[in-house]
Image 1: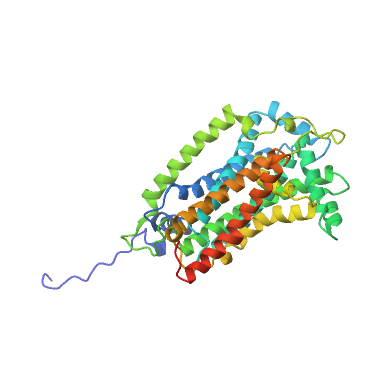
Image 2 (image 1 turned 120 degrees about the vertical axis):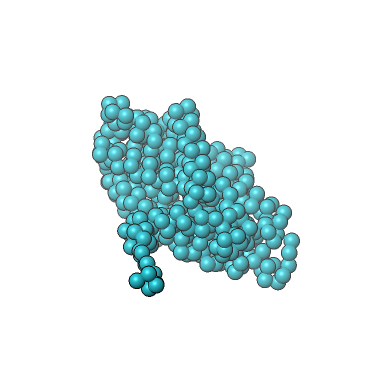
Length: 398
């Protein structure tokens, strides 16, 4: 007995991947996912977006319980919610501030993708899903802006309806479908409420798809490093979870400061007055995150071409993977240095100036500033990106 060798003991761990419950297996896979070790703080914006999205869905569902989509009751129900419901003011403040922070983080996320060419193969699908998410969020934000039925809500819906009505042939039909009549009213509120509510959950599904594609294709990096070799990557936990947590905490501090001390940055005083179809406000303008597109809309004399230019500013993002069709995933400035930095600077300044022009209703000198900003914005996508792609193919460096 003592001379007989014992058979090897094969024990199956309860934590083995093939025996774990699905949720636990997904969490284990996510926490052990290897990412490029040189990811910077711009990669934490995705975590911020997820946190704000959860906040927006939770607060929005609670607010929907007290809201009535009726032109005669909408404003009063919002006022009653803020003044009489327990912590109603807090819920609405969280939702309003969350909308601005979500859009700001989303713009930063898109800018990071442009800087580091997150649209390059094999991540074209990831970029396209992300741009569609941007469109869905913008539509959701506009629909939510109409719901309080204050002065800016009413006239914002009226301006949007007239812009849609400027489309040749089908414009009047689309305007009638959008407004539910000749002017904004109860049918408009019903449409916006259903659209806002439905798209909110569609966004959650699109985010899940976006994250799934990201895990399948892998993340790019500031240096353009490929692969997940041990020397080039680190596990998601604890290295990147700590960094994401830090970003979320910093965002939470800024979020609280704006909500409690500077609410005027994200709210419009005129929207705290009930909608009055007989009194047109002196300055009709959208929320700050739509101002660049509003400035482009007003910079063009024709309503139709203004709508085309304004909408095209978002649509052109869908074309970026083909405008810059280089096959490698290295950031733009690794090859083009100062030229790329200048081009990105022009893009950012153009976007900001277009917003300022929209804020000043493109009057006087702001008219030419808005037109110049529109030109600078499109020049980056239709000029610089194709040029540097052709130069790369020819082996030219700047």
